[in-house]
Amino acid sequence: MKTRDIAVVALAAGLSTALSFLRLYEMPQGGSVTLDPLPIFYVALWLGATRGIAAGVLAGLLQLIIHPIVVHPIQMLLDYPLAMAAPAIAGFFRRPGATGGIRTLPAVAGVLAGSAAKFCCHLVSGVVFFGMYAPAGQNVWLYSAIYNGSYVVPQAILSMLLLPPILRRATAG
Image (cartoon, rainbow, N blue to C red):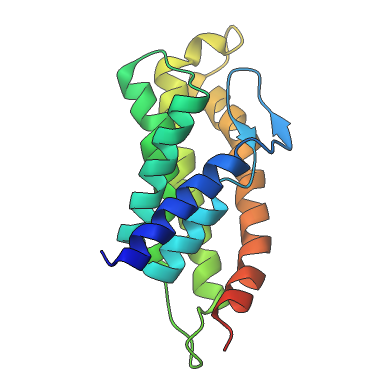
């Protein structure tokens, strides 16, 4: 990686961590609606999936250090570095436009795919490690899907709404 790319990855990880403190809504057993995936999406769409993954893993490790909820090592991996790196899948949808900017529809599709991957990490973690919180008689997969969807889906919507104007402004001229 170039020095600029390393700096951008570190900056995105730090910004993502800072945004994790600005919670619009917080769930009782962990998880909250924040804008923390936004810098990861941005790096992935601007510099590619590999650099986005690096930013996501670093952000996940920083968040693990700052506000951990750990019940098992596999859960820790699923809920922190893997879930934070998952939005970098957006980098695979990166399509430069005619003027050098990033095209909006592929970027939005990338945000959707990255959010779905993040959701899957949290879904599996919820089923395997937090299924005990499901109400008696409720399917743990359904419980985990509802619980994790209640914060991942709003994050995805916010990211899809906020990212295109940011990309347009950042890549203009």
